[in-house]
Length: 502
Image 1 (cartoon, rainbow, N blue to C red):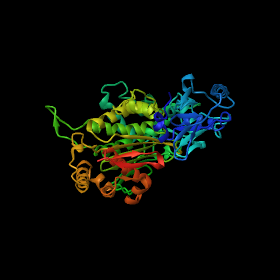
Image 2 (cartoon, helix red, strand yellow; image 1 turned 120 degrees about the vertical axis):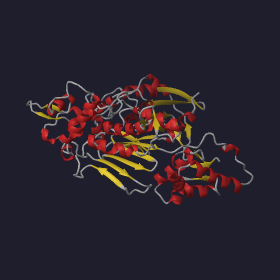
Image 3 (cartoon, rainbow, N blue to C red; image 1 turned 180 degrees about the horizontal axis):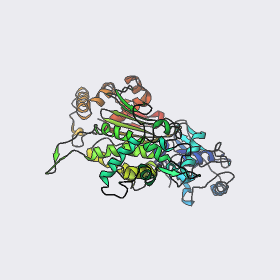
Image 4 (cartoon, rainbow, N blue to C red; image 1 turned 120 degrees about the horizontal axis):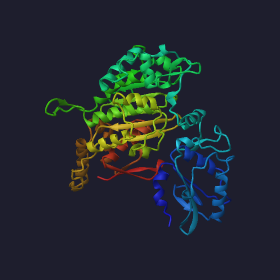
């Protein structure tokens, strides 16, 4: 028998839509199909209503077999839906509390099928999903999905509006020096710059046979003002913060005018800064010092992944925030795989394949699709808070947050804490957290801890008021206590309440 409890995570993440469907298929079902397919998938329930308290209740659904037949007929009509990404296994009739309902499990569409749209109109008929429900995609979102459809890497295109003087040849020289150290005696070693860049895929011939930069070449070696002629929104921004305040204490970004502003030089400038987050141990292998730990490699991999997978046509550019114990990378463009596939590894679908090749030739980056899974594995080995990977839409962004701080010590006998009195227990909670959390995290959540000394629960609204920050920041602070196993969230979405468990 079908069980609604199994769908709690879908409902919490707004990937579940309940529709009564009493008078036949609801018209909005196709908008929801499009939105789920273009976002992260979801489940449509026909014959179920959502009550005012958020619970789901089955209603009588006459002749579900007829509705399923109607559904298949319409979804296969190309004048209504441009592509059917479902198979028989995705549409089932289930029994729930004595009623029969229809369950439609819509997967995330492959990038080659996006955008999934209705009414033969990709602009007006493409939808996506956010916390408010289905929304119309913007023209920019639709264009990005069409651009990602192609099997040809978008960075191979020859740029007819640019000449070879758009390259910063000092950057080319620095890259060639590093390339040479990785390929001693290689046949390309003595090539002229133009020939070398052609071998890399940085130069191609236009329709008239004239040599011009490719999209990959201008990103890798061009001046930023030349890059902007092809990528209007191109912007790379690295910021260092001493605390959680928005104001940066040091910054590296394009358009400064005192450096090239291209992708390769940005990597060379920022990579050492990012690595400083990890402590360098003093270890000898018998002959030389070893200070390049798995954490350092993982931090470099995170930076490289962002540069190689970015959609440089998209708005807002690439932004990196380095804080004392956290690295947050905000990347333009969505993932071309699902979050689960990206994290599990083994799948490689880079947006800029030529950039990947150029970085790989100097032993930077992972080409096997294991970069993110390696990062997650390293963080698990270190006992740190699990990395957070999130997709955002309109504009499309991928955000990776890496916390370099430990979770609660599994060896600490929390359950054996003496609870002689409420006062003793509350004092023990503060002492526990002061030892388990980093000083920076402890300072941030201290108002919440003080609240929990006299209260057994806290809501996001209360947290927002206590820390005097935005709702998003307050939820992040609640997440710190949740990850430390101090709080457990109960309820869904806006009705969530956090219960103290120690």
